[in-house]
Image 1: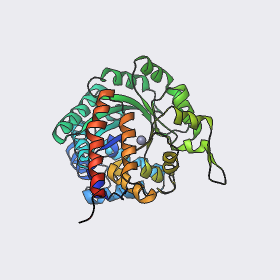
Image 2: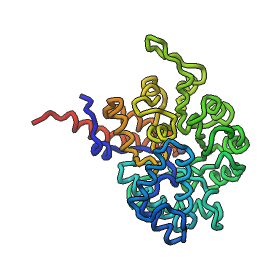
Image 3: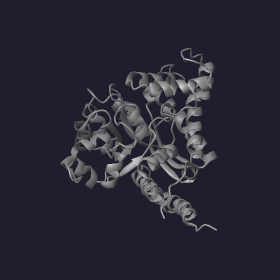
Image 4: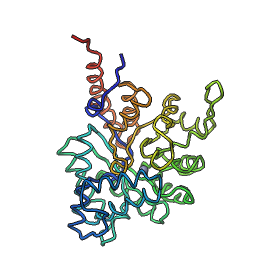
Length: 364
Ligand SMILES: [Zn+2]
């Protein structure tokens, strides 16, 4: 029987995370410490408990402006080598404690140079924190470097991704406001990455619709879609419940293009109304390459286990579905094929088998 997994059991499952922002996952107490050490004066409160509550309140306000304002504080205290290394280290620790075995965490190096750090210093500081956290807590963390879509530094950041590819940077991404800043604005960076045999994902189809997804895939050549939730706009459901896929949706499904879905975040930014109404349910039923992610753990008060648990409650998923999401994510990771296979066969499948077996054990 496919029993309903509890949150505690989900925490024990070996999980994989592909879409998580470094500046969206700090511990409130760390923000307070770093603000004090760096002389950052703008925090709304220096009480860690109240600060955590403030982040949740701002993020749940329904206003994208207020949601984005929260990042000015996390980014504001991440402006030194020590701060970046600490935040990366703690990120690895927190994810490992939640049962994550492989994660790709992203951040925009250009946002961390306001006190004079070079892009290289930023990248090296983060890599050091992940390497140490990974060693000490038994998790592998790859980083994605992100370029801001409203800025003009994507080529420079893409070159950075390639330069550090053997040191732990596994890919590239663009993020920021979608409307008015289509991915094709950064075409030269994506073409460069393709010529360099490098991997990249693009935030597309979150707030903005199908044209953004189409450009990301057919013009820019994205390996994965950050969110991609609006692919649902290319699927029509007949009165009898039968879904029909448009050409773009069919292409995304046929090519097994991974969707980095972030259910809680989508509700906060208005891309979905509730977990139960989130397109992830239909997209999974239709066999899209769906993965489950956190986006911003601090702002959304979430973790990979909590996201899974919400889906279990909304869609009645059992271990089979959670394993399917996890294997999907590992298959879609930017780390090399042998490492992916090793984690799938050596860690993920045996880990889920153990949890499933416990659920099936006869009582008494
Ligand atoms: Zn994101």
